[in-house]
Every structure is written in C-alpha cells, then in structure tokens.
Image (cartoon, helix red, strand yellow):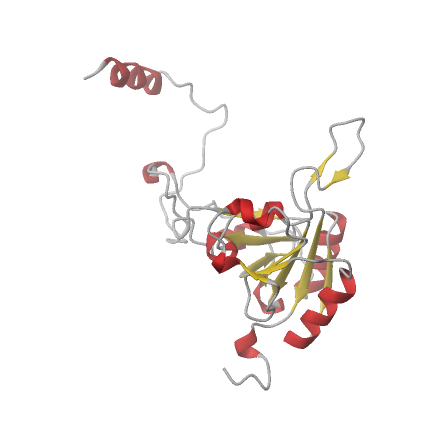
Length: 227
C-alpha cells in the first residue's frame, strides 16, 4: 500500500459518523437513480417521504413557483407560435442558438465545436424533458444542451417543456432521471441570480439574465406534424 493509499484509508476509517442516523435504504425503489462518480456503493434512492399537499393540476403550481424564482412561462400551441413568441419577447435578439427542431435559429448548437463560439448568443433555445412543480424548476442535461455552455453563456434562455412532463416534487423527479446517462445535468429554477451584495437580487450575474419556459408538446405530438 502506497503512502497516499494509507493516508486515505486512515481518513476514511476515522470519519465521524452523522449526528442523526441515516435512514435504512435497503429497499431499492428507483433503480435508475445512480451515480456516475464511481461511488455507487454510497448511493441509493431517496427515502420514502410523505408528500405535502400539491394542487392536482400541477401546471399552475409550476408556473407560480417559477415566477417566484424570477422566471416566466407561457402556453403556446405549436412550433409557429414558439417562433412568434420568441420574436415578441426578444425583438432585439441578433443571435438565436437553437437545440430543438421547433426553432431553426440563426445558429444550430449541434454545429458548435468550441463553447467560446456561444459568447455572442442572445437567446438560447432548448427542451427540458422534466419540470418540477414544487420548485418551479426544469431538468437539463448534456443530452438537451449539446454544449453545456449554452445554458450559461446565453443572455436569455428559452426552455420548451411538455406540460404532461411536470411532476409534483423533487423526489418524483429523481425517480425519473438517470444520473449516469449524462456527464452533466442540473435543475434550473429561474435565471442566474445573486443576492450577496447588500441583499439586492441581481439577475444574470453568473449566467442567463432571464429564463422563459414555453409550455408546448414535443413536435412529434403536435397535430398536423408530418414527421
């Protein structure tokens, strides 16, 4: 055993136990909630919890929580209305970078080879596979972003979300996502914000200045789609 391995072994051996015993998670409920970090033996599904009462119609809850976090949402009907809404909300936008088939955009993120190429993006457009009502958040991974920097360097981020894919709580969300499927993923609730200077909320300090969620079915589900 090398000196490094010996030191690490002693550290692990002498780690203090938690002040409160961790719950027994012998029963696996959601097999897909795993880690890609190489420490799978330390990961399991979240414990069973009693969900607080949530409006059976999850969409109003999602929209209310998203607004509380500084975001906004609109219900749109189809791809044509998506484009019209983006043009209405961001009339001064010169560079629209799209990762979705519903919006052509002036730049396709799939063709971006260097994240620095996104430093002039006014509006980034992606689709989230999952929304969480209690947090007003959407799940985004590298599978949706293609280039992770799109979610950070875009001045404004537009996220398409199927209303049918909104779940009640974070526990419900973790039952559906596969953490090993992508090397990058995050729950995004509202635009970038910081409030550590005189307690004043500043949006866009470390990322997108605004987050707009357009609630619309995937293109394949829209009526009249020939694809």
